[in-house]
Image 1 (tube, rainbow over the protein chains, first blue to last red):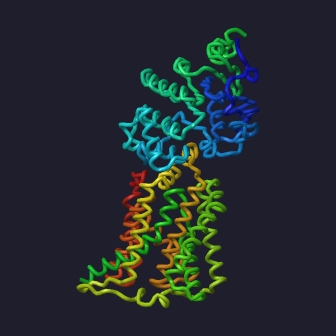
Image 2: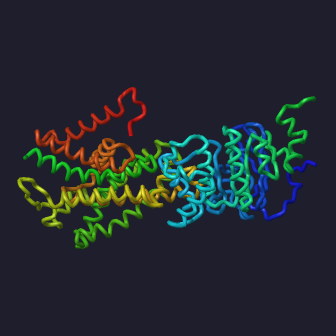
Length: 252
Length: 289
């Protein structure tokens, strides 16, 4: 059974939700009345063709893009006009598709920034937490390397580690697996599952569906700025509208 | 021996230039703002200290220490009210804004303090004129003090940026303000702190200038040029480089003056131009760090 937006009731309290979100860039309607709800502890995958508005949705949820209209709520409180630094400190972490480490700093320093300001830890606590995050993301050996000397896999791990260091309750991941081999992706999957099992809500955009399905328990499909399906992953993937969006209409 | 002495005096003079350049370098390094009002902010600070010392009869050192918190507050407010908005307008807007600010400050000083040339040398006694003679070398009290303060301020700031959480936050915001915000760093507040520090160091430099020689409402732009040259010689955005840049500029000027007094400023400009040529020569589009 396919569940359409608005129909679903999930267990757990709503952590992050958006309502009637609109965003236009010129004549391009990137988000067209998008609704989004993430309940505590969920792992949500977002799929859809390029240009469907997935990254923009993530940006709106993280606060780096302000929607033209609509509301974003964190724990039920309106945060539509709050900047990303405020949302981060209230529990929203974000990792980019193309990693953006602070290149002039070491791996440890990158993570410390997140731990100090995002998670609000001080001195020794911040260090302890950062080391723990690096260990979990398998970056501990590289702690003193300058971030701009890292290869892609380690940059991706650092991008995630820095977001994790802010102690997010909701972690927004944007194509964190793109460009990685299956074995490398498997390590990321293990890390993300561990985080999710620890109570972190995960919202993950990913094109590699079989990787995504190892983690998520709910799938959202977007196309042309709209949510076209939302629900149990296998149901969404077999949905006729979703198949059309990905493969084009077979008969019309 | 006179040449050795010239180099030594150049190093002392360079300390003053480095102190002037410190805030300029910091603001450029953190926000890519070229603050054209930097020299005028320094002179404004110096006038406040001079006014406290002459009209209120405060001793110069407490007057300076009292002025520093005011300078910090001024810098913070300046960033929050004016420069943050300017930054949203692109790279050139802060340049125009600070240029306008320079004109405003110069004319306000003219209005309040008249165009007369002022100096703090009259209230600092032997500090401004005295010196030790060590084996034919002259070590002026003031020159040594300025050099120590400049090294302490630039070195201290460098250490703060490298070693502390405050510095990490500033470097993160400098490198990528959007990403810094996503990990919880409030870029606007970080920028405001950087400008506050920059204005405070400018006040320090301006006050030393007023003890060293004289100030008037129009002395800002000259100091701005020297500060610029020190920053460029030392490498953009590096505080260690700025200290070295200031010293190189000072030595170039005193060696030029040793050849012929009228070559002093010219020699400084020449060294600056040579560095520009070498570092930004065609074919090297990316400037060497």
